[in-house]
Image 1 (cartoon, rainbow over the protein chains, first blue to last red):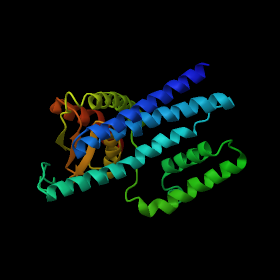
Image 2 (image 1 turned 135 degrees about the vertical axis):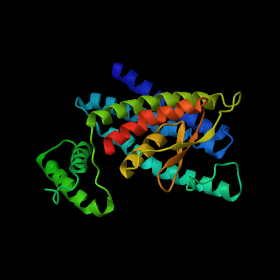
Image 3 (image 1 turned 60 degrees about the horizontal axis):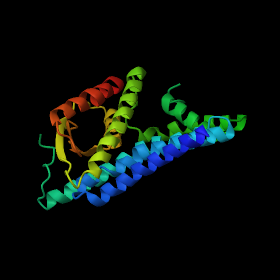
Image 4 (image 1 turned 90 degrees about the vertical axis):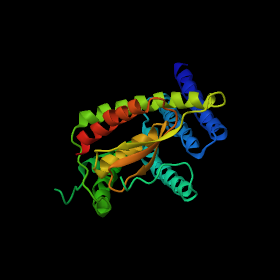
Length: 108
Length: 162
């Protein structure tokens, strides 16, 4: 009973985080603003689902089932690769077009 | 010893990772985990330009807790700002932060932290690694944020990696 309540709460919280992330993608106007909300899904959303999975399967099998924690860790390690790549590509394109972005950092 | 185990921490993490992913841990799994833990770091040595040295485990632990707290706080703030974006657009801005951290592994860890916190996006690192360009989603007090970024993330990473 308590386990089910905890798992349900975690799953709903994760779903809300992911929903807000999606709303942000739709509603925000500029590219760099839209880079932020998906992090809600990949941090809190992923953590809550992993925690729910650990709680549920540990209770079901009556022993600690921890391997879902690997998902948030590997997500955290690999996400910067794509995020930095996209951010740099966007900066490059905006500079080419003379957009309102800061100049390259190398001369400083 | 160094030839067989070039990266003891990596070996230990691989060993633990294998056992966590393949329950229940019997003798066979322990043997495969040991083989993976010894063979993979040796095979990956040419890919790792600098040896990773972790100096102060307790600083690392404190950093992980601080980052966890900041990620959850930032999730809340960004989520709220997204839902209010119609009435009050977020004050997004680029910020240039001068860096003292030079170690590549430390900078990689800093990039992981910056990407993990929803309110910040790591946009560009200067070629000489002297500064980083961040995009902030909704920060009113930029000098206070820079101070927080340097004291909470960069300085602990310098203590750990340098």
